[in-house]
Image (tube, rainbow, N blue to C red; front, side, top):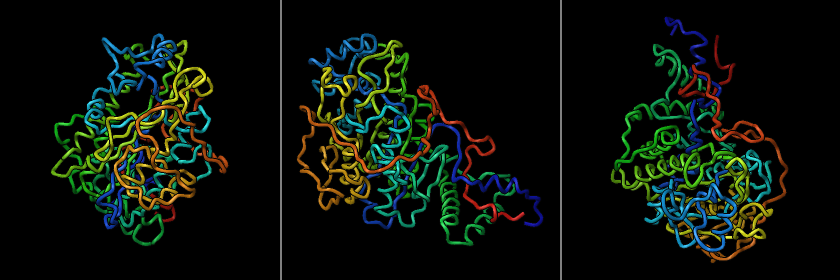
Length: 501
């Protein structure tokens, strides 16, 4: 290499302090399993879709009949979704309907691949975006002291072994759900996942990096080698040339691109175990859209088309029915208030709703216990009450679909009360506290008490990805892009004392 004029700056372009730094919206994490693990072949791939900003669950899944329909219409003179005519609701059962923009997901619901959990969410009393997202992603409502996210604890408790890519983030940051996971790789797309630096020196650069990261046995050295191996594997697979299966058409934009990247990585058969993808912009304080049209409708169209394309792409693709081992969960930090505001929008609320999609999901039903919309039934006399702790839904997926019976290691102190959303068994589940009977109701019926939030932890500050830290973030807020010279490149961790001048 002494015949090359290789500057320190060019070297640093390929050896950044971050595992990845990329522009665009965030696909937060993928996790690849230990292929030698007995659970790797039979357990599901988790895809966690986080809708940042607090989506309006009452307009996403509005009541379509009964007294609650009257309360809903009275509270939302402009925003209400009609039950007949143009832009009317898509019936889920005789009580609830989908927003008309969710037509592609409605087809999956009718095919019994998609389930709805209404009046679900974070039981901690907060209307702060940042607190609520952190509580949910840590899996510790009301507490911030945990140093690991709930997905990290799941992966750690089952073990990822010597997997090539145990975790993958496409975007500019690692989400709190995967906090504490050291061996994380980041990419925005497979085609852009490559080393930076001058093209003339790529081979020499790779050789130098392998020598540097192969010289020790610390986490830093392991992470560097892991990233180099991942770059080689993805480049050799010609990952930039990807055609979705079954005629699937992803929507234009970062969300569709990120879902396509996940599907692509799944099909590379690297043992993908979990992924999270973010979709922001749900903080609809004003001009949300009257009568099923407008801003919220556009967001839901993007969400619905993206998830439907993702499922179609993986359903029986290449002779391997990846969709049969797919569990997608959609959640947001909270819902919106029942009553619309003066700006034809909705303000921060409490109760929300979750969607669960997959081949092992008992779809075609609305789960949970509906609390009602009468004034005395509302949380704080303003918001939809929560009757299903979001961790009940995640916990059921962890046990029945992800094959992890050590639920107490993922959600400490939770009682295991499956709703019947997921197919699978509960034999051998271990908890930090005694679990109630699993024979709790599945489809929605009467009221039940709301769950009690966890306690016993003290707050600490942790920055949240993807939102501008203002009191009321704007719906279209996006993270700032990385510096242009580092955009869409794979970066490696390094210690400055390892770089020789």
